[in-house]
Image (tube, rainbow, N blue to C red):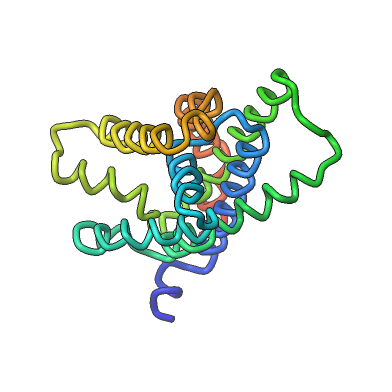
Length: 212
């Protein structure tokens, strides 16, 4: 209870809402079937290979990464870590299966591109809320922060690029281009600018107004 009082319930609500939007955005990526962000692609591919549901596999992966976070990045752990690690996979699956019920049938290429762009905007909005709330980092996100702390001369960008490239490679080796594609490239290069936009024009202002 002391922890919740320290971080504030408003920040906790902010990170929960952020993860809901992240899950919706990733669900839209899956619905477009043009490739997912590297982390999701890796978990989707590996979960398929081992015959396990995506949310359950993602939790198991997060538990493994959490051990590393607990040893070398304990300051990065918070309620946001728990929400993202244990619930994001189920949020993604929920929205994905809702989208499959829509009466649109198979999307043609230009429709899929539009859907991917919508997914980028929604996912960026969620990531902006989640990151701005600053109440804990997901285990996967913590990996690049930890290696950057150990190797400070290398910019964070390259640590994150290495992790994402490795995740994309694992996905490709596991299931080919099933979960890697144009959507992966769009998410890799499109999320950053949109997150920055939402940080500046919405999330930071929202947090400031809530805490005044």
